[in-house]
Length: 113
Image 1 (cartoon, helix red, strand yellow):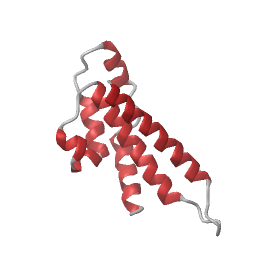
Image 2 (cartoon, rainbow, N blue to C red):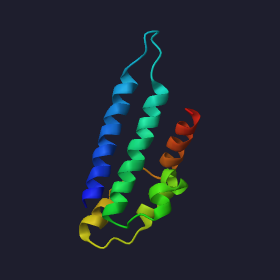
Image 3 (cartoon, one colour):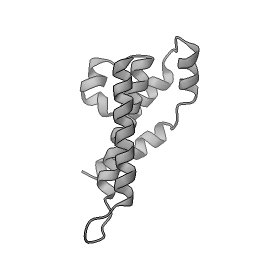
Image 4 (cartoon, rainbow, N blue to C red):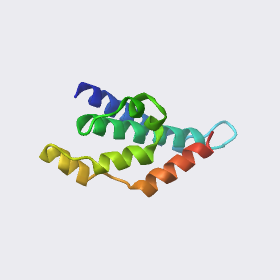
């Protein structure tokens, strides 16, 4: 549970960072769009991992490997997990976004590289 809380706190921090960057610009007036998208993607990834730690768990590959950055795969596995408790079922039913959203964010993130 504490590991899940840490991941969620990091996700919240990254989301706030993304919001701040979205509103900011450099000295030439150019927006910080690319870093904002990066931090938004990180926030979603960490929030998904936090939810997975609280429900279906994470494989080693999902935790540290290439699969750990695949927002679509993480979202699909979380959405398809068998909840063990009523709170897990409620959280799963209220999971925001869908695979299309995850694919869009992944594409936007990759475009910033």
